[in-house]
Each structure stands twice: as structure tokens, then as C-alpha cells.
Length: 358
Ligand SMILES: [Fe+2]
Ligand SMILES: [Fe+2]
Image (cartoon, rainbow, N blue to C red; front, side):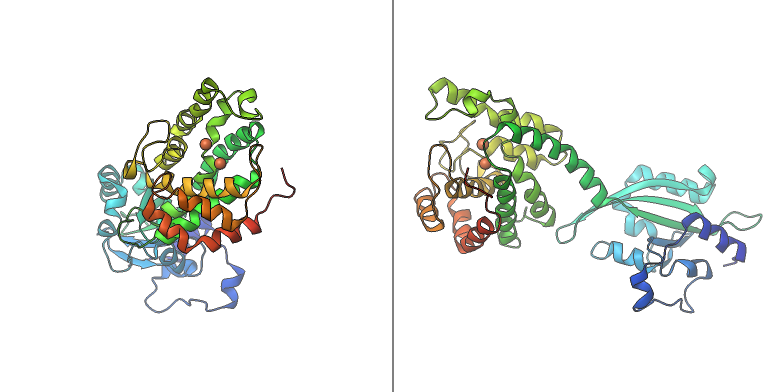
């Protein structure tokens, strides 16, 4: 590999590696003899960077890159396509091959990869491939730079739906603390299901998602008339009919959320295991697991809170009442898991209590 000093300078300019002060003090990875010279400036960079050759062999991955892909891919001494092929898709693979072998787009390529594992969750990063330029000849080596946008994308997406949630809260009597607690309970219960037989769908993404999306269960109330929402005393039949629409309205509002769990929770959080719930009288496992979890969380919290039609119950009374609804309102198997962690629900309620009784 023939590399010139100016090549390194040029790359330094492009990437502007930033030294992380923490890294400077501890366990610096020093450039070893098998670090290609071109990669030396990036050994301790916070930017994840790979070096590949035109045969697509990964020659070197810096520490940031190894950290980024821990739990997803093994990098060094593997072929780039073997590692990233599935996540890139056939169109991207074709474009990369054309860039590297035939010099399309100045031997460079830009795109993104999305990958996921049960344990590590979803990873979404932008990818930039560009040549290590050598004078008067086609490049032998290429830098691949990754820009991890996983958290940023998630936050951006959530911010849109948080605005919706804020708008719906203006109308609903439930406190902001209620929806925060429902998130916490739901995430706690989901975490308890992780790695239990029969709950294969519960992976790291599921746990993280339900911990945000549970709060959206009543977002459809934004479309419920105020006089019905705020009515003291029992609702008439037709008022109930309108009230129940909040499930379908919520599903409609959340249908643009990329994860179907949002819609499932809004639509099904009033369905009951025995098929007597609404809006569609689904029964048993026809009700999505996410909604069955939120139902337990929502009912527990509703019992603990003082509402216009009921007093606040203590933890023991709430559990006693819920026990009577096992197999009726609640998935009995899921309820048994809930019973093993009920003290955590009590703690969540205590730690996130409403400032003043409402
Ligand atoms: Fe609801
Ligand atoms: Fe609720």
C-alpha cells in the first residue's frame, strides 16, 4: 500500500478527528505496527472509520468503529460485503461495487444501513465511502466513515409525537404523571418478559419502544368532545359510544408512526382477554401483547389515582381488585408475571406521585 503524507493530511481535513478528552486520559489505543499509516490519525477518533481495499477486504477498523458495531458485526479481516451485505440491500451493493471498481461518482458512495439484533436493538447509521487518493492511478483503498444517527432519529421522531401527546393532555383529566408512570410500568413488565419462553417478540427494541409508546394509549381523546371527557357521573349509552371512539381515533392518529406498536396500543388498550372489551371485542392472544401489557399498567394506575368517580386505592386494595379481573380483563399468564414484580409497580407509583391530589 503506497500512501503519501499529503493523503493523510487530506483525510484529516475531511474528517477533522476530534479527540475525546476521556480517551486521552485512559487506555489510549496506540497505533501499532499493523495499523496502516493512513489510519493512524483515526485510531482514537470519535468517528467510526474503516479502511477497505478494492477487493473489499476490511483492512482496519478504529476503536470507535468496533464500539459502534459491537453486538452487530465482526469487522476486521472480513469482507465488507459479507459483513454489511444484508443490511445494505442489493441496490446499494451494486452502487458500491460500481463506485469502487469503475469509479462512479468519483469512487465514492453515500447511503445508510439499518440493522437490528434481539440483544442490541436497532442501529441506523449513514455511511460514506470515499477513496484514499493516490497520484495518477485508480485508488486501491477506501475509507468508510459511519455517522450513527440512531438516537438522533429516534428523538426526532418522538418529538413529533410528544407534541401530539401534549395537545391531547390539554383535554384529558389524567395527569402528566399518569402517562409517565404507565410508560414505566409497561417497560418494567416487558423487561420481565425478555428471554421468557413464549415471549420471543420481546427484544430490546420492544422494551424501549413500549417505554415510550405506552404513554400514547389515550392520544385519541383529542377527538372526544370536552363535555363527555369532563362529565361528572356516569355516561349515557350514546356518550359511551362516542367515548369508545378514542381507541380508533388514536389508532388513526398513530398510523403514521413507523412502529405498528403505537397503533396497536391505542387501538387495543381497552380490549379484554375474555372478549368483552372494545372496540372490536378481540379475545385472548388476538390482542397484541403490547396492548395487554399497557392494559395492566393503565388499570393499576387508574386504581391508585383518585378520579372523579372513585377514591384513590392503596397498593394492596388495587392488587386485590385486579386479581378478580385476571382472565377477564387481563391475560392470566401475563398477570402472573405482573404479580411477581408488583412491588416495583408500587415503587414506580410512589416515586412518580402526583404533586397534589387531583
Ligand atoms: Fe383509553
Ligand atoms: Fe390511561
